Length: 68
Image (cartoon, rainbow, N blue to C red; front, side):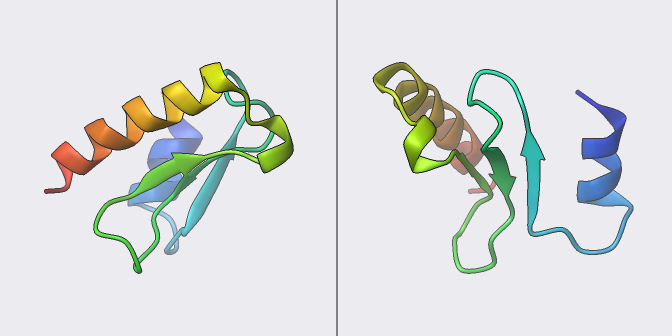
């Protein structure tokens, strides 16, 4: 886990999203949205594929457990 992510989500000014590259493409984002019960990940719609959708669903299910 990059230290920049840890800093952005715990120590820096309030962050509502953190963009990362990797399995979800350049548009992959971790979002800490106050309108939802738990943070979640998503990606740009044009980057969405069935494998990426499966990853997003699995990660969001785990995030929901952490923030239940």
